[in-house]
Image (tube, rainbow, N blue to C red; front, top):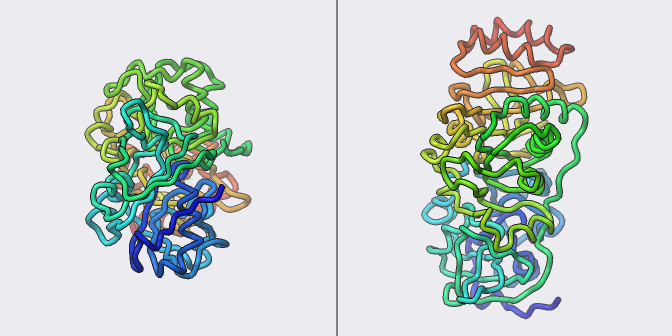
Length: 420
């Protein structure tokens, strides 16, 4: 499809540009930005999680600076190539960053659905953190994509809300369910055993959280699970279709799954279209501390790169490369810890290849501090660190480490406690 839109007429050198992440990326517009960047002049782009993104290490022009809160997917290669500036912020801080902070967006590229009978276009696949910038940006350019679902809850726009628009019909970027190995599946089964009936579920992005949803589905024993998460994916849809995730006991939005963005495939996109069982909401709501803490049995399921013996979590850096994020885990874990009957879970395999992921000292930053109440799960067991002393934490973390590494970790325990 050929699209005739001269971005030099509305963008200025030095502009900061942002758009919806993952499946919500308006790829025709971002492809045009890549093609025309040299003629526009230098611009800064703030991007999120990529899903078949137009902006990769192989495609990013010299005239584009790329900024992000995360190193997920193809962002990791951008960072390794020195082309990605990381902003290690809590997810809830992102709307302010893009509206009043140092990355205030001058231009928002937005993918929207076809209009409804009243001429309203839904944000469709994400409301999330970027939508706040629609109110403060100098320029809003819309990609009206006939294949974007019209979703409930999501903000709507009309033609008067944008500066320019293009019309397309293409499958949005997809995020298929990742494959998992046996060790990850074992961790997921342990996590599933901690989920209470009727729990309001939050789950992160990646193989392990999705494996937990698959384990819940396979177990078939849970009832009335609810969804209040940053993302809804194909694995969550499977739970809904199986009648296990009815949302029947949710404190907020009973009977409705709530998420900031849709991250999946065409099957999920079709299900979401005009479906009142799903609401797509902004970060201000999905990550609201009050909403999370008062949600029925809020259960947060988040992965980590490594956890140290005192319960500090690194979810950002692996082998010296930025591949994760601070993200929203902190908000959800804290909300789950304060929810009556909630469970704040950090899950990870105990090793990758022969390297222990339970460590004496983190090899990256502290993404979640040990002051937060969490439950650490590996394939070897469960370390409940809620209300635990330092010595209790060390003892419990040693028990969930890989047996081949326990002696070496135990030998470091006295030093860890002495310096803690």
